[in-house]
Image 1: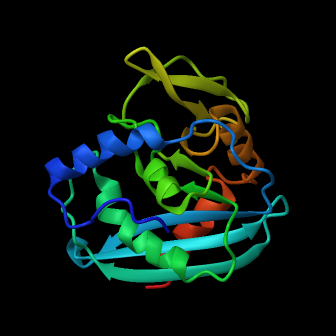
Image 2: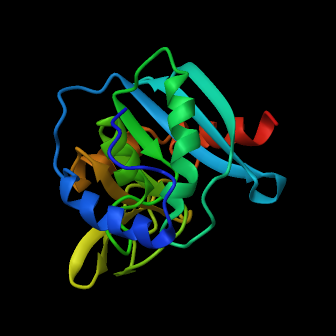
Length: 219
């Protein structure tokens, strides 16, 4: 893991860090092959005092479960919209550090480039780990989009201030889409392809769906 900034910072300092680090994000394909995919889900317990991070690693493309980890850490950063990565990533890094299998790709339950400062959790975590990463969010944070066809695989681009920042992807027929955006070392087209390839019969791709189950069931 790279140490590229301190964690004990104020919200104003965190925004400055985001503005500085977003220039280092690689938004194009920069990897050779993908054999393992990790899904990450982060939640909170004790009224937000404890951060809970779950990670699962699946073989790709078969999606067989290889490994999982669940950690709890004291929450050290306040809830501030747009700065969730500073609240959530320390626990995520601890969970990743417990893995025996280093994943080739990260699917993060959250935003990537589709962020007000273009530096959501998937960008931040991808830069820290130097792994290709994708943001797969359940809801929209910012941006506008056109209509989306009802069949599985339908896509429409998400735009903000004249820029394409991500896409809506329908992962099941007539089911609410997910919001996909680049994290690090991958382009949007390839990110969409991998999210779809990791999706079976549920709305969420298997890596993040199983991470959510782990985080929810093992308390």
